[in-house]
Length: 107
Image (tube, rainbow, N blue to C red; front, side):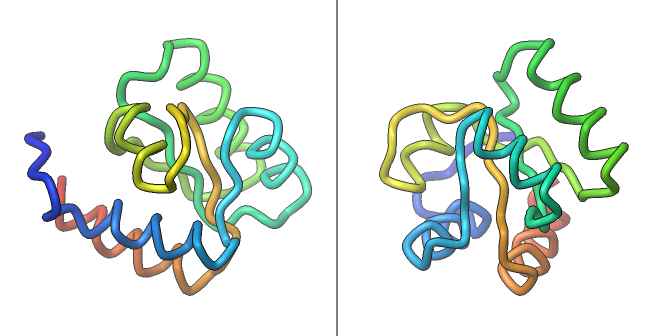
């Protein structure tokens, strides 16, 4: 998948969700959101380590939280105005639904 700057709706939506405080990022915060039932969607960077990909994929399966692979660690972090992020959770159902629709378009 080729990244076109400024054309990725998923990253735009993540930026909006982050500004409205509907995203938690990083391993501990994402794990807490999934296990606490507040995560509506988990996004894992495509260049995350195999261990990270497996851990969060399995966790999402177990807790029945939708999970997707999208972007790189640098791109995910940049979309939220932060440093690199391997994994993040969207905590708002509306944002999660919108992002899922755009994930389908980009794959």
